[in-house]
Figure 1 (tube, rainbow over the protein chains, first blue to last red):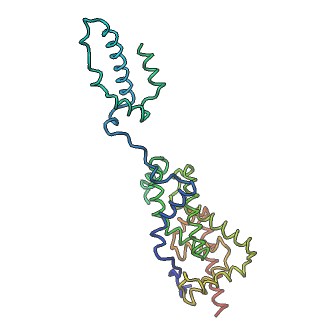
Figure 2 (cartoon, rainbow over the protein chains, first blue to last red):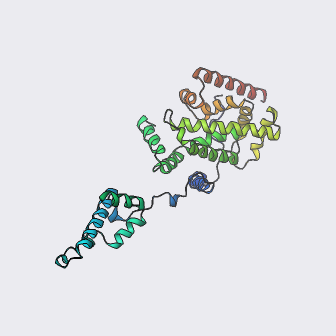
Figure 3 (cartoon, each protein chain N blue to C red):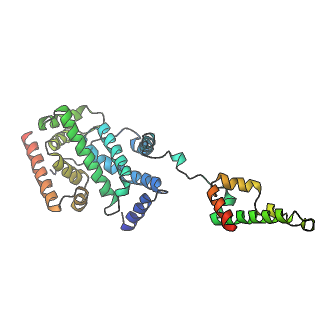
Length: 118
Length: 182
C-alpha cells in the first residue's frame, strides 16, 4: 500500500465549486424549499415610525380621539372657540394613513382603545 | 470547529431571521469536503453533484432536528452517507449490478473525462471497487480523506475498533488485488 498513490486523480468541471452554492440556492428556491432571497428581507417600516411603539401609537390615537371629542364638544359654545388646534401637531393625516397601511394598528385595536377610553 | 462556533451556527440555524445566511455559510464551509467523500464512492461527477445537492436540501428540510449535539460536519456527513448508499443501492437494483460489474464501473473510469489517474491509480480504483460499500467508505475516508478514526466514528456511528478492523481488512484485500494482477 505504500506504493499506491493517495493523491486525487478525480477532477471537477471548471468553476464547479465556485458556482455550486448559488446554483443550489436557486434550485431550492425554484423547488419551493426556500423563499426567494429578494423576498427574504422583512418589509422595511418607515424610519420615523420605527421609533413609535405599538402602544405609543395607540396612546397617541386615543389622545387624538379624546382631544377631538373634547374639541367638538366644547366647540359648540361661543366662549370656547379658541381651544385647540393642537390635533395636527400629534399626527398628520399622512402619519395616520401610514400607521394603518403598515398594520401597526388594526381596526379591532382602535375599537378597543376607543371603548376603553370611554 | 470549536464548540463556541458550533453553538453559534446552531443558534443561527434555529433562528428564522438568520437561517438562510447560516445555511449558506454551512454550504460554503462543507461543500468541497462532502463532495469528495461522495465522489470517491460513486466515481461519477454528475452522480456526486446530484447527491451533494440532495444532501444539502435534506439538511435544510431537517434543520429543526439539528440541535448541535454533533458537529455540523458529522451531521451533514451522516446525511451524505445515507444519500450515497441509497444511490448505490438504487443503481444496483436498476442495472442489476453485481460485484463484478461494480469493478466494470471502475474500469470505465479510463474513459471518464474527469478522471486523470494513471494506470496505477486506475487499478487502485478497481481494487477499491471490490470492497463492500461500507468498507469502501471507511477506506476512502481514512486513506484519501486522512480523517481520524474518532471523526469517522462520530460521522458513521461505528465504533473505533470496528473501523480499524474494517480498514485493515480493506488494505489486505487491496494488496491481494494488486498482487493477483501483477
